[in-house]
Image (cartoon, helix red, strand yellow):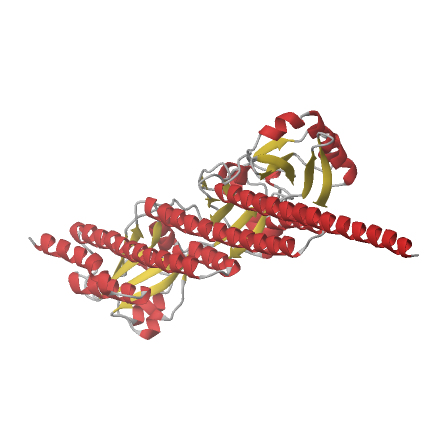
Length: 511
């Protein structure tokens, strides 16, 4: 009957955290509740592992003096009891009247001054990992019964659940705050910095990083990091071709590596040892169409991520992806506005054509861009403008390709990705091109080509497609306006010529 009553106390530890706001209050509440519920201990202490998993630090206590509390941390390398409990998962009982047990106590002088006669230590572990240890102290008993040992161990497990529940609630609150920031802020750098901080702090991990795939270079560009050194982040090749871990994640899959030092896919194992990183968990940053980046988190010990923790990281990654897509969309709209305004203000062919290709280049991750206009009288496309890392010589070869296939191109009005077969462009590292038709009154009057050096897929996202269509429509309107201006201007000049001819004849007649 007594056991049942104490089991109810275990539930209270978890239920009591609903009204507690801070981690410190949670830990203090647990330490106090355990002393109140268990009549065979006089004091308690909770020690939690630091991020290196090499030291156990005091998180809370009840019934102990300040002098005892400040005696020092427990280093696992120097504490046999600490290793047995935290690493091996044992519950250890020490009877301080026993000489061998006294030798196992790291700070025995402080224990003796505290008048402690026995100590019981149990692991605080969830189903996936051990977070710390729970200690109970008695000043009257020299040993604990098997029932008391079992009950204390159960309290330690329930304490771990309470802490994990609090952390889970904290993570939910964090996700709400992050979602609000994503929806209200246009500062992408600030959002990404917050994302990596929340990823690491939310799970009490070593650090986190975000890399975005750069189409122009094929590099996984570092956009934000937290808790990781610059040396660790900069060492090694960051081209996606040489990053098998990110290659797998960029396929849209989450990836867990328990120990990077034993996995050949991790190419910087010497740096991992220096940085003290062990486990890695990576998630894709993606739109509905494809992945465009990677969120990685690192731990300092083998870390088995719970389902709740994985879901937390997935939601964080999804929110981060939305922020990046929003930023890209805003940038494209800004560029489109600049290009449209510039085209509408100019009546110069060369200036209009230049705005089209430069605007496309600046708004995308392309290597270069080119504009071809259909010449009905010659039945071919003619190169009018280009921008970026492409040359006129290489584009003449592209023009020749479209000359050979121009009839087909006239009736193909879809935005597509085509493989590049022109050797001059291949030598520049260009693999393919996005072909954007310029359509006016249901006729293709031109083509815009957006050249790509390397892309991990051949899919055009919905937002990209909308941007390309808007740019194509703006170009068609600008070209149409320009042609109308040319017609009006020609009529005006013809009329002026006629006036001069008439006046010249009239003047001669007077003479």
